[in-house]
Image (cartoon, rainbow, N blue to C red; front, side, top):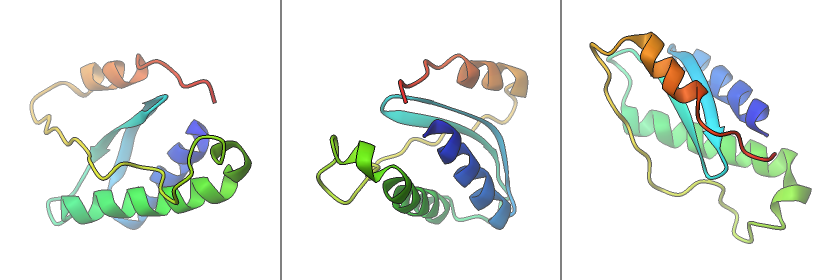
Length: 104
């Protein structure tokens, strides 16, 4: 499922003219290191990633997810965005790579 989410995020980033630099996840959330252009409305972009990935994941992994999710949503409404201008990308990538892997 994590690989599916990563490929979905990569495709969506390509459509939005931005780059997914690093991706990883934990059992209850994912981390994305992105390079975004200033013209992107961040809340619209996050909403698009969450909406599209939710629809596709629920379609692709329905048999597994219906054991855990009884509502037609996959993500919570909240998200966290951090700006990292000045922090070395290698440090940020290392942080994301070291996140624990989900069981699926």
